Image (cartoon, rainbow, N blue to C red; front, side, top):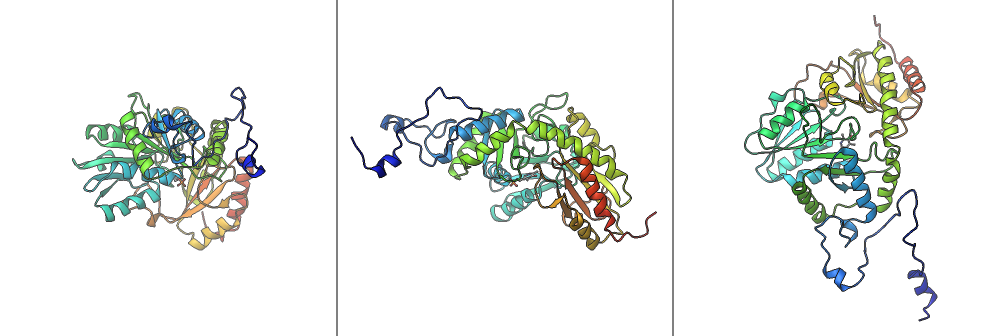
Amino acid sequence: MKKNPQTELIHAPRKAPQYISTVQPPLFRASTIIFENTDALFNRHWTDDYDYSYGTHGTPTTFTLADSIAQIEGGEYCLLAPSGLSAINLVNSCFLAHGDEVWVADNIYGPNMEHLRNLETRYGISVKVYNAKDVDSFQPTDKAKLIWLEAAGSVTLEFPNLVGLVNKAKQANVLTALDNTWGAGLAFNAFDFSDQHLSVDLTVHALTKYPSGGGDILMGSVVTRDKTLHHKLFRMHAIQGISISGDDAAQVQRSLASMQVRYQHQSQSTLKLLDWLKQQKEFVQVLHPADESSAGHDYWKEICTTGQSAGLVSVIFKPEYTLADIRKFCDALELFKLGFSWGGPVSLVMLYNLKDMRVLEHTHLQPGLLVRFCIGLEHPNDLIQDIENALKQLNTPQLE
Ligand SMILES: *Cc1c(COP(=O)(O)O)cnc(C)c1O
């Protein structure tokens, strides 16, 4: 039947042949997924993995990425969310209910703590804070449902006693969720670590960081090896309408091919900067898990057998330096850009006041203002030069 040009344009006659093969998989963008016939419509099972019934439940593009992320992290099942924080929310809303207790490390990713505090106020969930370096500070009651782990911890980069914490959680029947953004599935395997072949129950990963690698996409994931946990998450994911765009998924998929190379490179560059930073008189402390003086270094060595350690390093300035000095330093940097996040090509800097960030006492941290560097893909010598120049701008007090 001859149709009008307008109709012809909408119902394009050409379809890609089955045999065509490309380096990157074809990209599916969908809200509507078209059923072949009413049989297919009535036989859809949206509660299964890999059922194609509506865009929010997934497309071949998002399922391909989810499988890749599960594989990188050593897991079995994966769900994708529009940001790392949204993936954290998925775990919290799936496994916590009124009256439950959740344990969270003092050095956890800050917005996760804020999210939990909000649940505490509004939904009667009890939030308990533990010290990531001290297993004894984790004292689950019979109401405890979930413990959040992070290795290394946010900003101050302490490496926790994962073996001790996970063993204790398992004994108490508490679900273990690890924010795996720092290790990215590359520094260690969260589903098989230490001589004891331990495994966490769930990992959350801000794909915004290394998997995206571009500093331009927001995405998160929740991975598990446990089918029951996955199905609970799957249902929550569906009823909350958590979904991601096909274009974003394809971009992250494309970046995955170079992720390991980038991670290794950024780890190596950071070690080079670490050596140099340690020699600078302006800093009272340099924080990085591969450094012997950093909290949890021995745990890092035990767990991260590849020797990799991501691209983050923090410094604490001597207490003589005021906030105005540190701001001057940050503003004087040229290659390091002032901004949140990490894992992209451009090096970033961020300043923090530790006093506002921790509720527990931390004797291992010197007082002073903290600056975190996120090492990008620039040559490390240029980055060192940039910091050196910025330090010269400081109104240097009389230092020995
Ligand atoms: C960035 C980050 C997140 C959150 O990811 P977004 O995509 O920015 O929401 C969670 N955890 C850690 C450790 C992060 O660094």
